[in-house]
Picture (cartoon, helix red, strand yellow):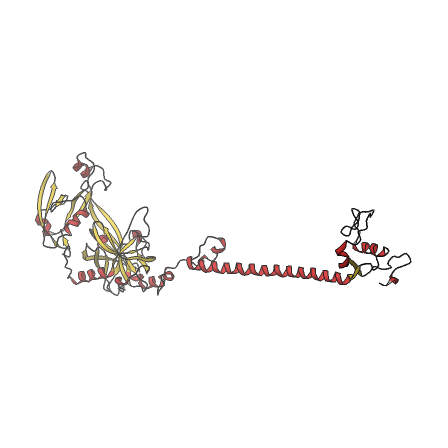
Length: 470
């Protein structure tokens, strides 16, 4: 050790660049710098005892300045080198910490991005039209709105189908005469829809739309109005054909209802409520063949969830190509019922219509009594009158009476208006539906036995059934 670094007092002129540590040889025996009886109680671990701790450099100077400690059992270490090493180590640790934080942030971004992407894939798979529950998604609602043609993979859009067939759908309004329980007659009106099937004025509709009507008015899509005549009807399929004096009309194109499948596009065009002609609704085919009982008549119909309302009857059900696949029949009603509409398959309706137009319509069960009927009872809403007359104070009962004797055959048999029909072929008649069901079991030419009440007298009358088209 260079003694020139010390002044005359034995102290260092400048701070040394070295620090002294006990040698390995000394550290094995007993700690250095632990003189016995140190008045200040200093040790190597606590060189200042309980007094105020000096700085490292002060302690070094104090130890080196002691006699005999200049070289005794000490090793020298470069202080600057030591400090640089410590700083480098700390810097390296800090650098590693920063890298770890940066890596963690990158991993978080990647994980959140993957989660978001995966979520969007699942959302698009299970909610293809958007949930629309948040404010951020509401701004894009118009881009993901429900489109039946997209869902069903249809060849044409609903608008294209409507543009193609709207001129083939007509509005129908009817007038008829009904007799109330006081034997007074009044005018009734009805409304429905129809489909042009021939360019020279033939129109197909439902039998129940025009049944019992004295006048039938048809309005085209161009607002032109025509009187219509009945060509023929088939109560068992609820199909009727009427005709207007017009030419150059646009008929529909028939599709094949046997090829319909669940989930196919269904477009309905008609005159709901009898006031909204040309209304278009769309949905899907819920079931191509559904057995349904309507007013006592078993029918095989197409089921759809497209919106159907009163007045749509007789309107068109179209497929994805704009082809007619059904004639709207009815909607299932009820406070808890939605999305249940039915249509007569076009393969059935078209066949019946062709037979009616050709005059070759022959089928068992297409018998006609030559009379129209009315009902009176608890469902009529009337109080007093015929209902009270026949109930004799007992709970209200529904009665069927003859509203009009139409054919000469029925007149010759002896029937009169207001005769009450008690039974037919031994079957009690408590509604018009029951009467229809009995008659439809027969064919034209069959004879049936009526039990009627005229005044206070009960009578039996036999009737030979006629053809519906007569």
